[in-house]
Image: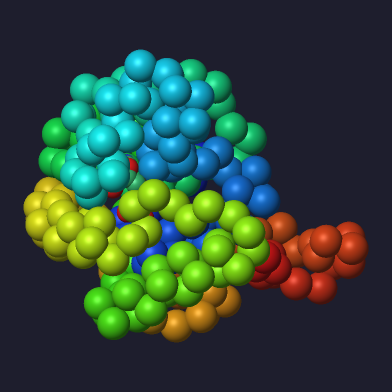
Length: 213
Ligand code: ADP
């Protein structure tokens, strides 16, 4: 049995804008599978998994494939209305192989692998802004958004993204993520062919692009 629901797999450096690009898809009914968000939930709950992951995340390292794949498999037990969007997963070739198997088991064959390419200078200024904005808003910044851990996350990304990109080969499409959210969304929609229903939040049929918050 095949399932034509679109599946979007986002690969991108820390602060590349994967979460921002995901938002309009999620608003359109896509199920978000962000392994970073799922891990942060576990850390907040102080679950055994969270306690184990916290130190690794704080150090900019990668949580073990078994833990990550198990979390994703569990999340995929429910079926979304519109499609799936993967953010921050897969980060290793074994994760990419496991994801291919999970998708095949469910007959999901409308799969788009999208890499958001952003220059280091932009990534660094975006993470500084995210850190400063959180402090200005009286919130606690992400524990791994400090310069030292960020440099490690970026180095880890350069290493793993090359391997995961090589695994996907011709299936991977790269888009320029150096521009603003709207341009990035347009580029993503252009290369994937995924469009949203022509309704605005007010219910007027006048826009094919969902607003970006
Ligand atoms: P980033 O902004 O670095 O893309 P994420 O929110 O995706 O951040 O992930 C935060 C941290 O969680 C990572 O640095 C890593 O320690 C851990 N993590 C998230 N997803 C994975 C994964 N697929 N495999 C291994 N570790 C992961």
